[in-house]
Length: 417
Image (cartoon, rainbow, N blue to C red; front, side):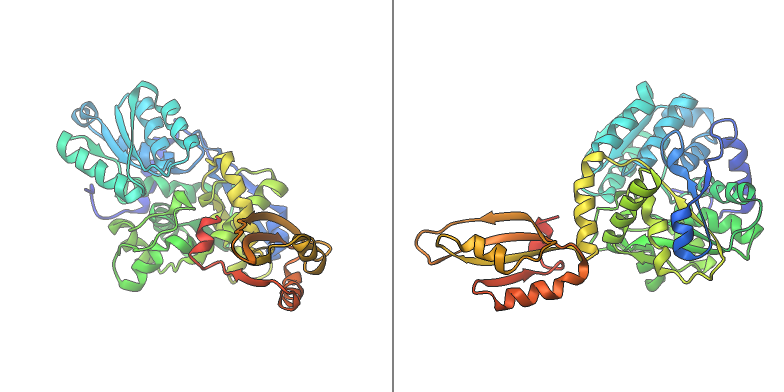
């Protein structure tokens, strides 16, 4: 499936020349909020401001631009959770190459519509499968049947070289080598490309990968010594939710000695809201991975840090879930099963005796059963402060109704998010 099995810094330089007439450098912006948090300088590499709102345009265009005339006539095919599809659609339309794009059903509608808009008459969308990996299998089968060129989202040296151009721009824009660069990790294309170029041209730069804890494919591959298939996958960070990382990308990341930092999905949501509310930046979950990892990294005071904000293709309808996950992660949102007596005044006594002055009921689902003395209710409570939980639990223990807390790792909790 790959052109060659190695990537060099020279490949990244050549990719930068191909991209130069197509896209300009994405902005590098200082973040006062994050700088204060780490006690140094934190810069955001704004790949969310690319024409396709993510860095994926780099690898897709670099690969398609190298196809010969016969391959261009046969067209290209790809699988994507959304961002890579937009890059392929943009590149196909720009180069006049027809593209068939396979998207999993979990791809947000906003991303689907953007793919169609960017590709125009040159793109054909095929939606099917519940994960990226199922869409990828369909794309591979298509390429084998039709002779179309497969454009991998990450596992091709030409894709990797294109993504690596982000590193070149960071050094050029900053005017010096930063101490640390934090890169989001899905299939590993961006991390592998940047590790290749930085390892050759600026080997003293520390590189860190930020991987979603619920989709830690690179961490699993490094532990196993080879890419493995994740049995359980949380698709929330859809731009980085890959069940199996690439062969090409794994080898580069392994040899570079980069150990990914696992970022809980709730922490990603907290950072997404901070980026929006404090910085005015709309980031998708994968786009917020790098800055979300900062509090888990060992960063010396006064360091210069660059976080790659990889994408901004976020569907506004997802913010309700983002807020919910953030509140649960911060310890401010909790759920309980309350066995209420079926008698007048039971709810009022619950409110008076148990809720604190800054607590709020955000969910109340009650099913009355006339043949029983009590009826269960699912109650969601948002605390004014996370540290108010202990007092709430003590009041619940002392209250007459039987109350059971729903822990975040329970199967029931998955129905609430």
